[in-house]
Image (tube, rainbow, N blue to C red; front, side):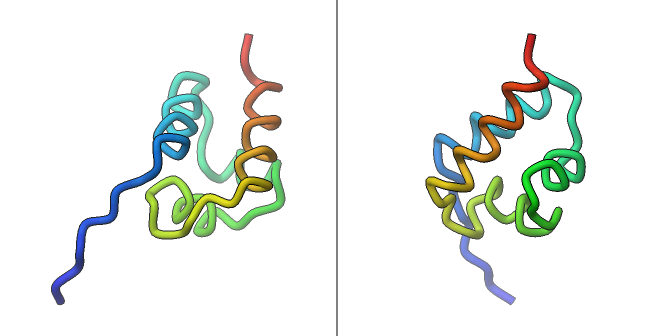
Length: 67
């Protein structure tokens, strides 16, 4: 199987960094915003385009965990 490399968006990379900085799992964030863990993983990896409403929901969720 020859898969092409997918480049995550700048926003997706920033979200991944914020998850890591706050010690959060994708499962915890996905549950908090009403996504499946697989869907969140696909958004963060670039396999699925990050919709503005999903970006906003994840951002708001992460704000609740940040200092």
